[in-house]
Length: 270
Length: 251
Image 1 (cartoon, rainbow over the protein chains, first blue to last red):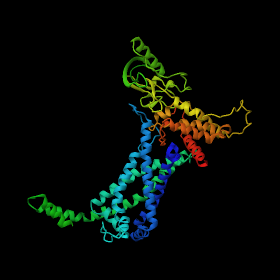
Image 2 (image 1 turned 120 degrees about the vertical axis):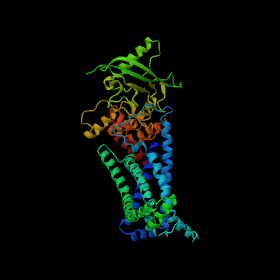
Image 3 (image 1 turned 180 degrees about the vertical axis):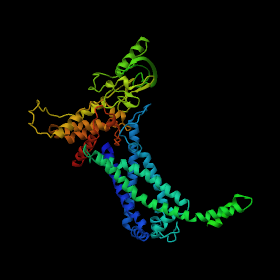
Image 4 (image 1 turned 30 degrees about the vertical axis):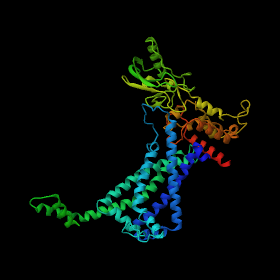
């Protein structure tokens, strides 16, 4: 089978699976943006997709694509390491025109897939998985205070809870930065591997890669920044209460223990 | 102005294909910056011979940048730090007084070391033998314009044909891929009417041989084109991919 046995065939599998995942991300990102405009609209989308047969087929297809892309990445990397031979170069210089991300696609891929696991635990487990359990008969299966169709409530809770919400926002932004670098090389490289490139189009194809990566990541980032701002706004609204708490602590002549401070903060702020 | 400099040269020494290799550092005094890099190695070898030591084995032939023999990885770059030249065209004015210059052989599974800086690049010949030619005798040079060829195609074919098969692309590639070489050889023929007839079969045969010989998979980092002494373009790789995929889809 030439898709497995020839180098260009293996790269074609990487290209097609990668591009298909990019299209999925565009679709996913476009749905997320609904959150910024209307929570109701987003929940309607959650209900529409949920655990319907088409959503399940899609999910299985996506899982297959991720596994294919991941397995081929490992296979190609092992082959490429072997092709370098047993002795490594003592000196390797930076080369002009060689982008950093192009040489670190596997590492970036690991970062992306690592955060994907976190993301699945944060949302998929509490939404589609819960619905699947309900369909299978486990009606009281629940891992979240939010209904599986209340996606907006779940997102808002994760990203706006004081401190933890902001931590999640930053984590997701780190994920998006890694994804941006991965796609910036991935998109143009996939088109190049599929043969859609020539001398004239070289710059254009690279530009398409950068634009595509920015569009995908931008769609997701807008939502994260929206909730980051929302969460920080909430924190600021509590700021007077914190100031008050500090004043109360200062009136305590001698702070006997840390617990006194914690108790005071908790009673005043929360 | 070119001056005389004192340098240290850290060279990979390996007695034979099976032997363990190691680095050896030599001091060289009063090297004229106008000397070529290979002349500097010649001076070093003279010095080694006078000390009754084994001279450094290295490939070289034309010393004017057209044969592609001088395979040296100098300070982390195939053919040294200058761009668009071979090692023999590199001059000592690219180096500073007191500098330590590291010289390594090409390191790639498909290019095993024969001795010191000399590697076996027969793999490239084998890829050429697999299909890098036109099977029939196309006769003498036809009259100009007897076969119309667009100027752009002729230029691109000529640029691809400037590949001298030195191996710098595979040596520079983090994946040890020979795609730039193979794509240049496929392109120079696929772009012209005489070569177009066999383009599909050629692409399949040459890629199959390249994979068989243990070269890696191209990930489009562009290190090959950045280091190519003849500045062969990465666009050739897209053409090879296109030729290969179209041929496979037709099967």
